[in-house]
Image 1 (cartoon, rainbow, N blue to C red):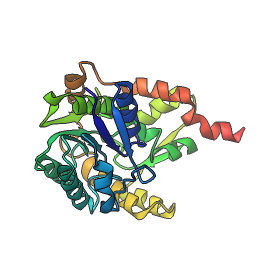
Image 2 (image 1 turned 30 degrees about the vertical axis):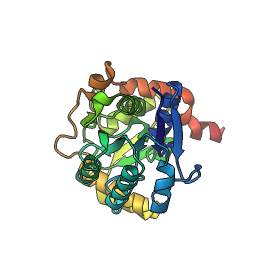
Image 3 (image 1 turned 120 degrees about the vertical axis):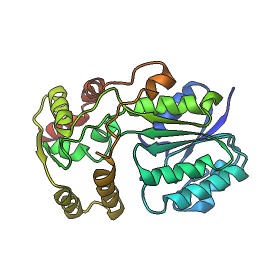
Image 4 (image 1 turned 90 degrees about the vertical axis):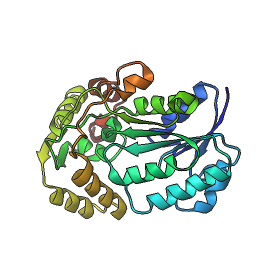
Length: 280
């Protein structure tokens, strides 16, 4: 059955994958961005209702993260607008082990609309589509919590679970915690990426204070510095966050994509060799 589905953040890491998968299944998709028509802007609640009008279901991705100050107010406003517009289902992307994000989850759960909560571990794509890419290209990566074991999850697996949740009522009321099939430390990640991209990447453990100071010196936006400080200090090695779950297999009927597979496929795109190509 065809539905009208709003994908908030439809050009982001999971959003664009959700859009693609929904369109492949013949669904009507509206992309919720500031440049969309109608526009959707998290910083402008007056855009919520028009973006939701005529929509049956929505995938919610809050930028930059549900943990940041102001997220609860925005999520509450969105939930109220969705209720007023008669939406049937909300699927919220949340963060595994983030207490502040769980407070946002409660707002969706108590909205009176059917929901599915998708709590994801750190994305594999953070190393190829996000904040870890630049130091990888420079060949010099310095990060805190170097021995933290993280069960990285592939954005394709997240998107596949989201689409399944949007299209099948059996997932109503469920909270899924998505991880990969094993944990990796930062040095292990860099060793894998160096191997598949055939280049040297030096990893240096550093303190959280030194890492945050380096971000500030580089002129990284204040809200993003706050978020990274929060994630490293409160989430990365929080109790239970190194636990591998079976929820990807539970929903999709297959094992999650392995980090080695991600690394090999990503290396073929050349994204980790840009610095080498540009220097020739």
